[in-house]
Image (cartoon, one colour):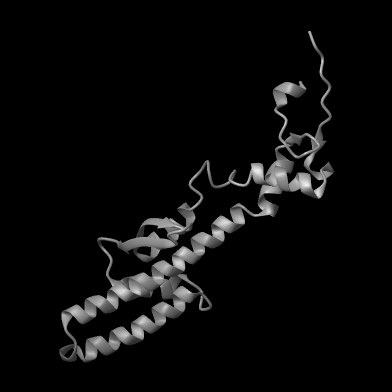
Length: 171
C-alpha cells in the first residue's frame, strides 16, 4: 500500500490565481442544478405574462405571451400596482395606459390591426425588461461573491493550484 500525503487549502488560503481556478470550477453551482429563474417567471405571471422561454447567451432573446385570462390593460394595471415607480416596467406600463386611452377615445381612427401591434409592442417591451432581470439574476448567481460564499460555507478544499480535492481522499 502506498501512502500519499496531500496538502489541502481552504479557499481563503489560496493565491489569487488559484482562487480564480477554484471559482471557475464552481461558477455554475447556483444555476446548473436548480431553476434559478423561477422568481422572475413568477413575477411575470403575477402581472399577467407567461414567459415561455429565454436565452441570455448568444440569442439574447425572450418569448412570452399574456396569460389566457389577461389582457394588455389588465397587465399594465398590475404592473402599476405591484412594481415600483422607478422600475422600467412601471414606466412602460404608465405610458401604455396613457396611449391606450388615446386608442380607446379615437377608436375609429385606428384599425384593429394597429391596436394589436400596439399591444404586441407593449408585451415585447415588458418581456425585454424581464430579460434584463434574468440577466441580472444570472450574473448575481454566478458572481465571484456568490460562488466564493458557496465554496466557503460548504468547506470545499483544494490543492495549491485551486483544484478541488474530493473528501474521500482526505478522510
